[in-house]
Amino acid sequence: MKIYLDLCCYKRPFDDHSRSRVRREAAAVARIIERAEKGELRLIRSPALLFENSANPEEDRRRAAAAWLDGAALDIRLTDTVIERARALASLGFGELDSFHLAFAEAAGARYFATCDDGLLRLGRRHERTLHVSIANPSEIGMEVEP
Image (cartoon, rainbow, N blue to C red; front, side):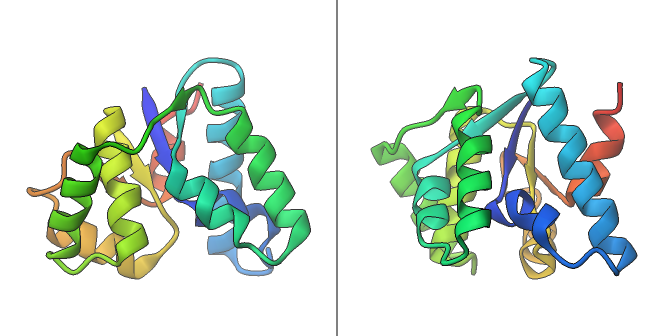
């Protein structure tokens, strides 16, 4: 199974764990990354993830996310097809960077696009028939990837 983790997923383990939602999502992301490290599923790395991570001003988060991204099993490249798809997704109301994340996930053949961003989840679910990838919260995916 191929999974595209939005950068907010890679950063979730660093968020304040006093809220149960954050704890659940951080645990789910940890399970997904652990399964990927064991070769049981494949994480996707894209230029959009690398770009967004490089702009992170918090060095500890940037370095940890970079290490996890370096371990991603599938590296997807920017192509004209990805650019065209990102434009189409932007026309549906997705932000520019989110459009590229989704287009890369689709181009890589991801089963899931995971995000902790509620607005992106709502918009993705509103357009689920248009997307070629299932958009979900990592805790939803984490349950499916349990050993």
